[in-house]
Length: 490
Image 1 (tube, one colour):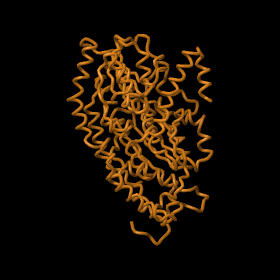
Image 2 (cartoon, helix red, strand yellow):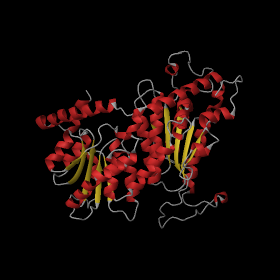
Image 3 (cartoon, rainbow, N blue to C red):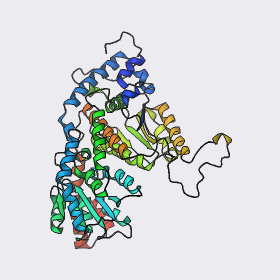
Image 4 (cartoon, rainbow, N blue to C red):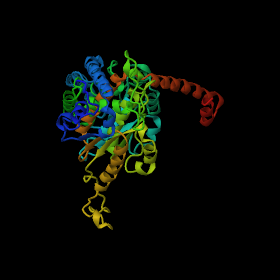
């Protein structure tokens, strides 16, 4: 775009940044979900040609950088080839092991064990599986030993397959689950060595690898962390990977006007525009590194969800973002609280009390009439207010959520993603890819490697060390665990 002499931004100028009017191009899956970016809240700030042109030049540079980044190969390139290779090489081993362990039958339960990325995608798939009346088995997801306390009473080592995931094999949460279970438990272990790999060999469990070059949270598409459990559960893995591949092709991250790029740009600009009462936009004085002088102002993205399964999808965005882009110099956390409508009575005052430091993403189910109807529930309410006639069960929760969206969109940059009806594995395939791409693009904008986990390593090392020192205190001094915990605060 050439620089305008006028200081007033036109709708067409803004559309080149955000495509607010071109919904067909912005969203290649309109039958699956709707998208709305609240650009009115930031439009006036972009009236300054200097600021607008600065962003445009930066975005073109970012676009080229994203297109050339080899990291994309680890989660976008040849995902169907990976799927077919896995099905040819490893699916027969998994099926053969299940057949051997359960003597030609299927287990009643599958427990997938892992933490962080190793549980990130399985929770949604497990919910979809468990809500299917014709399911092969019930799928439980746990991430630490305490979760085993909630096992169903009829779960036994005879009717349950345990799938354990840890790329390094050193995640103590996963290792301890293995150690607390009987050695005779029926397991398939995915690890590249470490204590978990050693335990599996000790107990005679089959051990399969996880691609070491692929970052955990970007591992949905080209590792077994989701594929293997879906195979065991008898879910349609072929269609799911075709849907992932379709999303990759539709979300062209080399195109600055693709949906993930547009959303990443929207967040980037919104984060850096100062509040309305400020006469200063940005510090553009650094000619070499102009973006290095931009001091991000907004520091929190509120994530609002009105449905449990939508919340599980929201968790994917939350982990991608919080683990992938918050580094020294960039402070923009995503927080998902109690969910809607509860948030509007417990958290909304805190969010709206300082709206100029906040943004919002609403991931909402916009038709909830397919909810389970208990016999006590009336399909339509016995209303006191005649103006409420016409509502059906579920409509009110959609409207409650929209009331929150409307208020926040009046005061802060807001992204709305609405799913009409029950969320499905197709939504998971597409929206999961969208969340990964948004985070990858934004991380390139701020020059951060979104697949790295420097602090996770630190916590992991502390956990291992504290387990050793704590166990020694208990073993040698017979200290109560609460005393050990107190010692660790020193």
